[in-house]
Length: 87
Figure 1: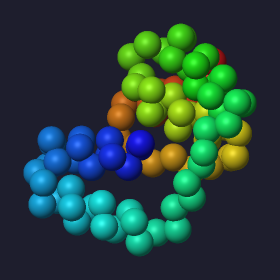
Figure 2 (figure 1 turned 120 degrees about the vertical axis):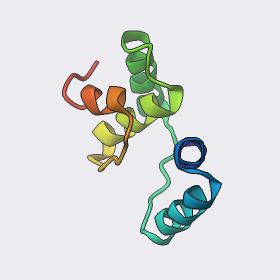
Figure 3 (figure 1 turned 45 degrees about the horizontal axis):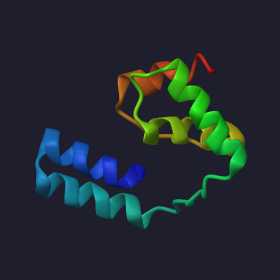
């Protein structure tokens, strides 16, 4: 879900050609898919209730980041600010 949003936003801001290049680069990295379990889903719900400006994908990213101590790369200012203020 997040990679699809990444592609869309990149294409919107930088063009489809740049989105394709960056998408392929990201796919080459060791990216771990995280299935949303009950704990992650609950935390994502709490993020969305408290931070309505975030997309559902952003809320799941924040919940997974906390649950698995993951690194999240983003250019979304609202998401960056959320790293400092958990729900």
